[in-house]
Amino acid sequence: MKICITSQGDNLDAQIDPRFGRCAYFIIVETESLEFEAIQNPNLDASGGAGIQSAQLVAGKQVKAIITGNVGPNAFQTLQSAGIEMITGVSGRVRDAVEKFKKGELKPSQSASVDSKFGVQNRRK
Image 1 (cartoon, rainbow, N blue to C red):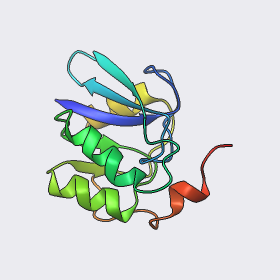
Image 2 (image 1 turned 90 degrees about the horizontal axis):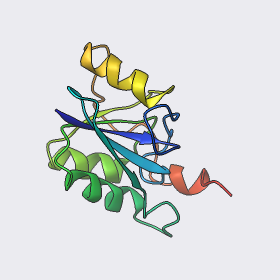
Image 3 (image 1 turned 45 degrees about the horizontal axis):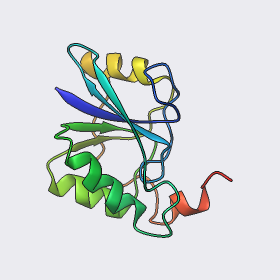
């Protein structure tokens, strides 16, 4: 199964990025083999709409779930419409999150975890 983890770096040992729409990287992982693709987020510095644009990018990768720290309402709705499960409130290393997901230790979120301007307020300088 392919899943996506928001990341601060381009590998499995990087820390999970707490932001979805404005994360540094999306790590697309095949859970069985741990083969992965690191995608630098082109929406990191978008003036607006980063959550929706990031959600569309990830949905195009045919992932079944997203693991992140937080997701806003626009991204949540876009991902939900695409049938993608969202798991929020996760921190630590990407590799550890994949293992927890495989063991069924991470539960899907039922709603957005932050308001629509969270990523803008927390952009890195």
